[in-house]
Length: 300
Image 1: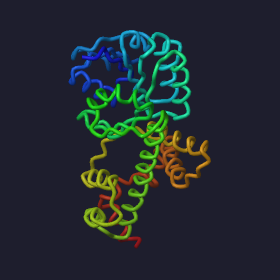
Image 2 (image 1 turned 180 degrees about the vertical axis):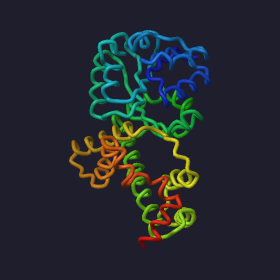
Image 3 (image 1 turned 180 degrees about the horizontal axis):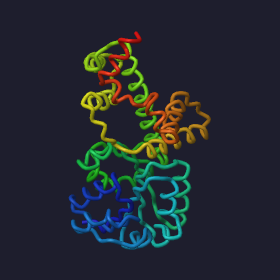
Image 4 (image 1 turned 30 degrees about the horizontal axis):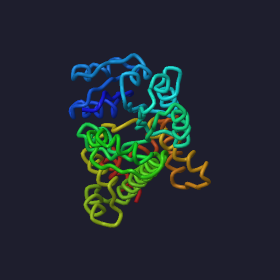
């Protein structure tokens, strides 16, 4: 069995991913700024360390699964970061969705000490994190990817090595951008249809087998129809990802019309959620409520 694996960041995604590594038989050293997140993993046999540096000292490979670029920087190259104690030959797996240019900067700093790095963001949400069926999109040297494939297979179902370091993050941002744009378009289409007097169940029945369908349509609309508004994540995280997408594209000189529209909608939600919810984003409720159908009948 390979040596101990470090895992830093045990939130809604990281916790289930770490659980699946333990389930697969890997020995884990774990750390999170919220000690309550450690308890379930300790109960399963994980060892707790007091800092990212301590995790790296106890491990041969360390996974970083935090929320923001700044947090990843602190974990990987900060004063108490992995770089402070990892030995030459150590591998850092940054599985957070962060700025690709920052990831390349981290890689250069680590390489000065003989430490390798992969960027390996994930797609699939908390449901697939729990089931171990994530899509894992990896950038980095082929030999480094091969050395970590056992970890990826314990956490994911669909594994992709897409190129050099930073390419995994670039691919993840493209995927997120498409999903966010589609969600806005789906919301608008459903309100449009209901205002036109259509039954929302019929909208779903027709579109799902027509050219307007998509994975997002199949994921979002059934929950709307069931009045299941349980959040799958936070507006802040989605907004953070859109900030990454638009900033990355700007540095590449690529104009993003629809991504910027979606970004603006999410900015409105963050800054004035109640007003915006009343005006446009009460989509889930509006499209399946009798009140919406009545309003459409009154104002055809």
